[in-house]
Image: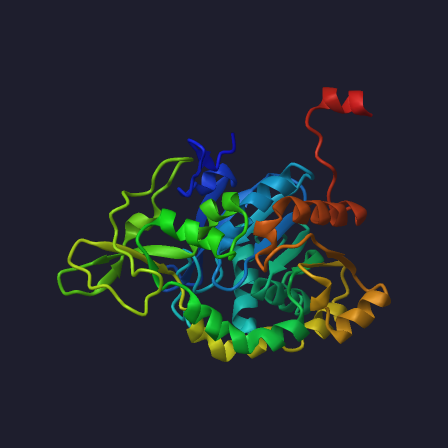
Length: 360
């Protein structure tokens, strides 16, 4: 029986990051008392370092299932980080989402973790994270970068879609009565089409808020408690704002509600800068490159020409939503593993020496 089913019914309870990553750290960047703190998740001990950058509104946990899938195929290390304003990362200027600042964040975190000589790095980014990966690579902020993978980020289609993002954000529920409810919504709405991934990644998208005596909502630190597989996060008595939050429910002291960790609508002034020019920047990066797409219709003119000229590898994945690495983690891992091995960045995983000698 699937781990996502209990008694024949779908199980929407959250799952701990521990099921997929080896460790979690909070990395301080800058001065000890006034610096920024980035939440990172790691896996693996040898091979190239895959630096995973999530899309807007998501968190490092969107790479959880992919991490297990890629680690079973090749020897590699993984570092997935919560970008500024996202997940459990805490920065002083949480409203600065410029590509320059966000790409600098990536370089700073890697420098703190690995010093001035980190292992060979392959930057892998999805959506906005893909744009940040392109900027980080093109500005050579990490000198040991050897490869670049962009997932479902194409300048042309991204620019066309910008006007519809606010409508999408307004159409989402503003709050949920429980973590289970949020996971169920994410799957049934199609935001994340893979229940296994939704159960671990939605924890990074929403936070528990409690209402204090003054009627104001306060984020609850209990949100970061570890959850083990199939263990209910909290009881199911929390309020919910019905189908949408157009009608806010009045909350009394002690009640809780789950809300989005980041208000993406407030980052609108940066949206154009995230994507404008990324196609040519991607093509100009003098690195082996891979572009993974959810649909061939997403290719813009510059990338179409570059692809015909053989400037990068490209693969269109089976039908899936924008959360490509969540919807199809095995397919994404297959493509990334093939890319890594083709360029001799990583070696295929050998389960044991004995079984290897038999198969070879």
